[in-house]
Image (tube, rainbow, N blue to C red; front, top):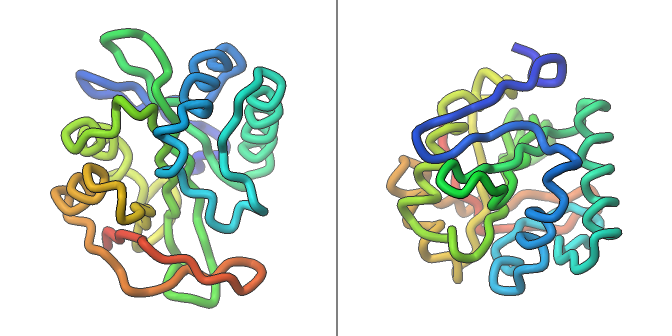
Length: 186
């Protein structure tokens, strides 16, 4: 399966994951301007981007970059749609990472959610859509998701799904070491 040639739509009874679209702009602005949510976003190795966007113009720039990244095979950014409200409530980014550290041959998954969705059951429900197919979609033998200490609901969800907290550090392009990763192995 080549996710960059044919991006799947993943769906369960509560949520849909599909490639981001321009029409997601206003819903995504509500996510990325949510100051309670921003501390849980993973900006590791993202050239200083904290993913706190407060204007439509800045959100448009991010959307344009995410679409360009997909077209170039850098990463996939899925919008997460709540089927009950038909609104985008966050995104999942994932890509295959090869590196000179533990996190090589890894599907690095970044989950950004609006703060009211940062609940154990919801996170587990969303991750259940992508965790099982990530190994094939991204040709990896492990999946890594960051969950800072303050993200207690997220950490609980990851543990409930079989992810284990890793003591290993992800080493960035500039040598910076990043921690707080949970790993699911194939």
